[in-house]
Length: 264
Image (cartoon, rainbow, N blue to C red; front, side, top):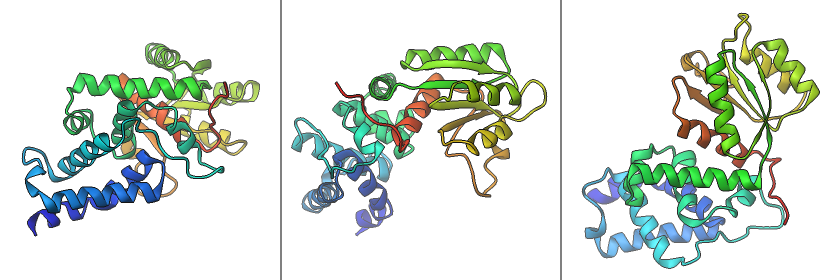
């Protein structure tokens, strides 16, 4: 009874994860049911050295790995979302790490504990997933950042993932002009710019003209996370880690409804 209470609150999130991992609501829910049946049959398999949510995901993935040698998601329908199409490009373990990190919101150390890996291995798996997504959904990127060193760092990370930087804008007007010249597939935007203008205002002006995923980068996230709508879907806090930026870029493209796999 105590075990049921500990894991009950986490089951909706596990179902979400299972559906994303398997590529099917029916299949995902079936694997969650098998996990619960296994726990009922033998409660001792529940790891006592992990928080309940982590332990639940760990058991699920252990059973999933045992049942799926190829671990490829089952196609849902001809009309699939961008996330479903992009998910098919990822190899098994990186896909698990990527979904745990970006969809479920686990930290790198948490991902490592769930997968039975080291934190450095977890970072490599997430990075591998990011690269695999980039190989299939490579795009052009606009960087809106007034600090040259940070801009260069961002440009390097974007290029390492296989994307092309179309330009670096230091002001609101520069950003809008660059977008008019070459419409990017993704934007990385600082909030406070060199001339006192706002990267957020630039982003809103750009979004008024066409749809594009935007990742905001700021030292003051509380200014954006006010509880009022709309709030940014992708937000990175300065100082940032390279792994967080790369994961956010791949996550934004992963869920971009316009993204599609390259045809061989």
